[in-house]
Image 1 (cartoon, rainbow, N blue to C red):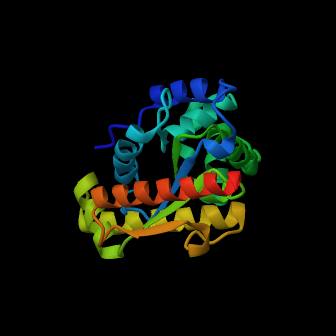
Image 2 (image 1 turned 30 degrees about the vertical axis):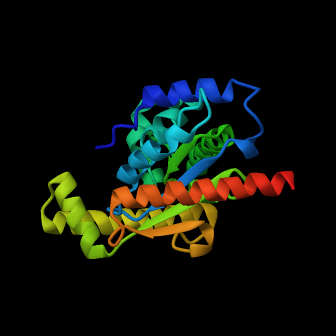
Image 3 (image 1 turned 60 degrees about the vertical axis):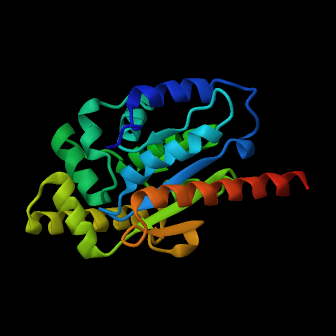
Length: 238
């Protein structure tokens, strides 16, 4: 389902995009962030989005998705233990500290881990041609003019149904999972970045995937993004 999300491809992307000095300024190398409610289709829409973006990409540029593999990139960038990988998603400060206590027998600076995630996201966004899913990427890159921000939303009922189907969970487990994930994402953005993840002013485009199927959502995002990027380039040269 999420065929475009591959760590090896991501590492190759970093080496080629960030290692090159002649592919234009960050303003000409766009990037996209996708914030999503749990069960709103973030990974699926991102995967389909690449299919719409890649045919229009400059020669030699590969649109690449960073979602869960972003955690592995953070670990690599900052020489952290791979044992910590499963504890670096969008969770609250208290959970991070509790986890580190258990793994390492002491209380390390959890904010430092978030800082390192910020550094990696910033570097990827400046390199361009990436789709960054989650982890407050839209807030982190808010000052970068080359980044387009998307939010995927949906009703609680429909999102629970999707989680039941995708992860083969029972109704009660799926409901608990969706509510927990939503709460963690909201708290992560609030605690570390002081913003409300549901604030519509943080996004260029908000898509309700209850009403817009994934394929159509990906096409809508791609079309809106390309028009936005063209207008940005025109504004810079005017």
